[in-house]
Image (cartoon, rainbow, N blue to C red; front, side, top):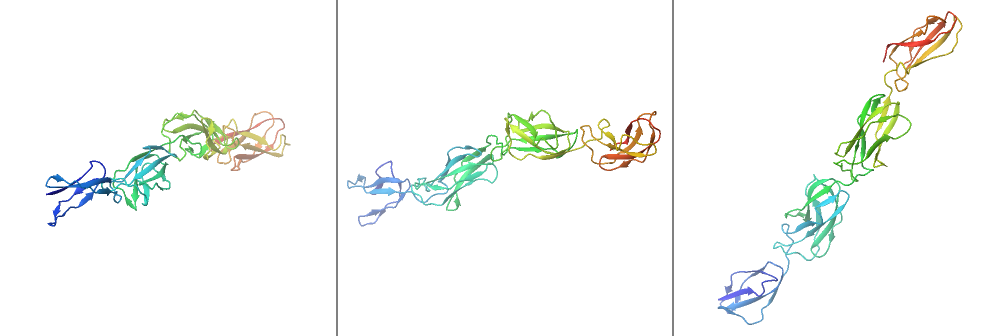
Length: 358
């Protein structure tokens, strides 16, 4: 009986089919290569080994296998804005690593959700490996796989975690709860700390202050800043001077460079202490008239610019100059006027009374 075996335990390997006795002094069998490498094949007859030179056999890697080819990463974690290297090692169905290039390879993420990023150009290293740079953007977890000739690998895909980066002055955002504030009332301003690609920071610890974008226009005051320990920082803003402005912020003393939200402070309720009366003249001849004008102001000194209140004028004292007031006109701009006709000579004052305040 004839037998065939490999000379070396290491090197190229494979399997032999059943030997066929051709009845003509020859014996044949099929050798199927598995492990790549070089070896030699020896034969024996009736238990005796042949002493002739054993022929060499070279097993070379086969076509790339979607199941056996694998992707590896230089790191399983990448900070958003930074990169890791992804490598595809081609292997055939028996797990032999390919040692030549020439394949069309692309890398991709396993899911459209979770951690996201971009892949650079794929480099064919001409040794069976293909590499690319993955740059993280959206924080979260995902996997990275690859395609060979448009076919996706079926081997296990390595996990990648995109971590939030350090705070960015350009990407952090400022918000205001209400863009219209009545003088004397409050609203909340919020800073959301973000990294360079816009991921929200989820922890606190930053030193944050709020301010106004300009020294003119709407003004007000900020309360103490609260670190919410989740990447947001809040403060209460109290509007005072009417007008329009923007909210700004600083992180660690450095200005946030993203655009701050605009807001408007409108005058508050009329204030008896701040509203004032003026006269068209400080003297009037008996029988003649002057005009008394009352300008309504709120508690912060903002001029009211709308009407709607009921106002009457009167003299400050029962003695001294006297006269009569005509009907009060609401000018619908925060002012109220009445014509005063002088009667008895003397000195007196004119004061307004609010019957109904708007």
